[in-house]
Each structure stands twice: as C-alpha cells, then as structure tokens.
Image 1 (cartoon, one colour):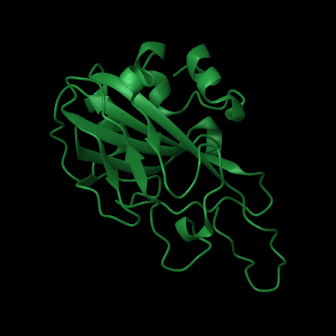
Image 2 (cartoon, one colour):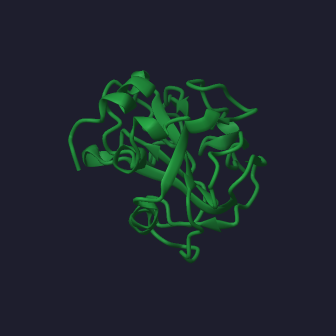
Length: 198
C-alpha cells in the first residue's frame, strides 16, 4: 500500500490532510468512481464533516450506529457495501469501525441502530459497529463512511474480515460515496475514569 493517498482522494477529503492512504477506498477506486452518477451518502444525524453525537460513541450507554441514507447508485449495481474507518489508527493503518454488505443495489437507508443484512469483523474482531473511543488528549478523529456500489452480489458469510471484504470488492466497484464524521472526547478530569481504552 502506498504511503500517500491518490490526489483525487486527498482533494475529496481535505480535512484529513493526507491521512487517507490507508482507507479502503484508496486502493479500490479511482476519481471516476467517486460520486458516479450523483451517488451520494448522507446522515440525518450529522452533516458531512460534522461531529458525531455521543449517542453513537463509547461515551454513552446503549450507544448505537448512526442512521445513513443514500441516493440511487450507478446503473448495473447489484449490491452495496459499507466500510467505516478512522484513518488515525495505530501504525498508520486505518482502524476499521464497521463492515456491512448485502445492502440492496438501490436507493436506501439504514435506520439508527438497525442491524444490517451482513456485518464483518471490526478492528476489535467483533461483528458490530465499533463505538468511537479516541484517547481523551487526542484532537478530533475522523470517521470516513465509504459506500461502495458493486457490479456483483458478494458471497461472503457474516463475520468476514476487512481483508476478505476488500479482496471480494476489488475490480467490482462501479461507484463510491463518501461521508465523514468527527469525534473528540471531552477532557478527562481524572476523577473516576483512569483506565481509558484507546
């Protein structure tokens, strides 16, 4: 994997200041697939580049995945797959927060907390939305939602890894839609939560 992101991706995600080379989209797509045919991803819970509400993070009990909506994908789309990553992972690798596939190849949405058709293993090896939990002293982390329009249905079983999903999608991406959220945790006052998870 290249250490630098493609120019088109760096332009699409300027707030990441070059930190997007490890994202799945960097190795799967080109400029011609970005937003192809008006394909777009959004959320009723946050605007592109805006902060996640704590109800979607590790800072609230009973937190769930945020709601998402997308427009019609390019013609010929058989299935949609979603990869959500934090490019500020350890060792320069993006940290995978959510792997979803089996979504119908048409305009659609995922409701807040809805269980998707098929979910793969996140960076913690769990098949679920990995709640954002950046260190208290870090600047805001970015979470890049990457929705891929594929020209074939995937045969992966639930619980597949990021590597499995990326390999299955390679060469089959018709279009991609991107959405970015951010999250920074409040300063830890040290009164009671000293064993913070990274």
